[in-house]
Each structure stands twice: as C-alpha cells, then as structure tokens.
Length: 311
Image (cartoon, rainbow, N blue to C red):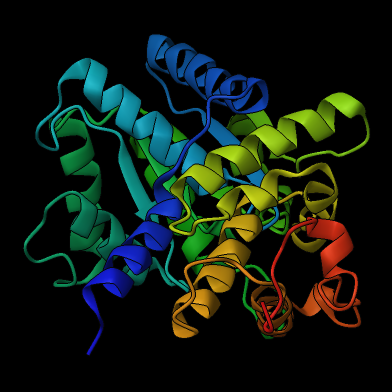
C-alpha cells in the first residue's frame, strides 16, 4: 500500500516530464517550427520539416509544446483544423502507420479495413477536417531494427499520403531518421527545413550558469527538503556528465534518484540515492557502459552538504 506522502512525492516526480523551460535555445527551436509551419500553410502545398536528435534532446517535448500553443491560440476543441501528433509504431508497416493516424483523427474503426480503404480515410479526414500539420514522431521506426534497412513499403505509403495532402508534415526522430530521407528522393525533395536538436553545452561560464538555472527549476519541483543541492556548480558539472547534456535523460535520472529516496522513506536526498540511481541508469543506456560512478566517495565534495547513509 503506497502511503499518501509517497503518493504525493511520486506524482511530483512524474510531473518532471511535463516541465518546459522557455530558454533561448528552446524558444529558437520553437520559432523555427513556427516559421516552417506558417510558410508551408501559406503555400498550400505539402512541405516537410525534419527534426532529429538523440533520445532526450527534446524533440517530442518541442513538438508537443508547438501543438499546445497552436491549439490554445486557435481555441481548438476538436480535430478540425488541429495539429495532428502521431507516434510512428515500432516494426512499422503501411497498415500500422495508417491505423495510428486514423486513431489520432478520431476514427472509431482505426484498425479496420484493407489498406486502400484506410488510405482513403486518412487523406479524406485530413482534407475534410482541414488539418494544417501532421507530426510523425519516432520516425526511426521506419528503419528495420534487425537489418538496418528502410521499411520501404511504409515510406512509399507515407510518400503517397504526403503527395495527396495539401498540408505540412514534420518528421521527427533519432539521427537515423536522416537515412529515411536520404534513401527516398521524392521525400527528400519536399524537405524544406532541417532542425537538429543538440545536447545542452557546458563549455563556457554562461553555459554553466544556464544549466544551473535549469537544475534550480527542477529542484523546485523535487519533493525533498534539500533538493536545491542539485543546482550547485560542482553538482551541475557532474549531472551534465551523467546526462550528456540531454535534458530528457536528466529528467529520467532525477526521477530514479527521487524514487530511491522514496523507497528509503527519506525526506532528503542522500549520496547513496545518487549512486544507486546512476548504477540503474547505466543499465538502460548502452553508451554509458564503462562510465565511472561519480557519486561514490567523491559525492560529499560534489554536493557539499549532501548527507550520507549515516547522517
């Protein structure tokens, strides 16, 4: 049975996923999406924007933010003239992709029918509802995991839908998504804007200050008495080392730290919570194999007043 206090803390940790910070780099990315959208809408023809970057770089958060801002400004309450955000399914096929789009369009029979019929419904709904923008996220799923080859049937189907719909498309995904575009000349010709989501840098004093500001904002949401310790200068550098400048990864790591504290019935974050979270975090990221745990004996120096298990 989860205690009420634990339930509140876990909800606060989960809410870290919903935070969005209006920094210069996020606002610049949002502005690029908006410029592409307005130009594509004015041309009344199919244009594609490619948004790519490593997992945790903020692609999905950016696109959800754009959708929410657009809907708020336009006072959208249904699918008519709405930005459509679709997750490309893993092991993608033409039918599974069509079904995903139909589901987001509100089709009650999204997974029913032969592909020809489903395709007509996709293009028909998009036209009839006046959908101005279709966002396809996780487009790396258009590449077969086993043989690293393009899912040709799905990309050919997508190409035909793009050609038949007079609206803008954003294709977002991991850097491997570039392969999808490079190997389909007709899709590549329609790409008018490229946006690479880069990790947060930590090269200058200004970078460190901005990263500490982000950590301070996260610390305000963390439900522990000493959450502010994560915003210290030395703590910022070591947390950047852990997440590689990827804010999505930072969120995941801080959530693991918080869960570790909750499991210990601790009201404060302790050195072992960070150390334990780091060990767990590495298991889920192949590129972290062999990374030294920075939260061992050096944790006191890194976090200053951070308590230990004996505190």
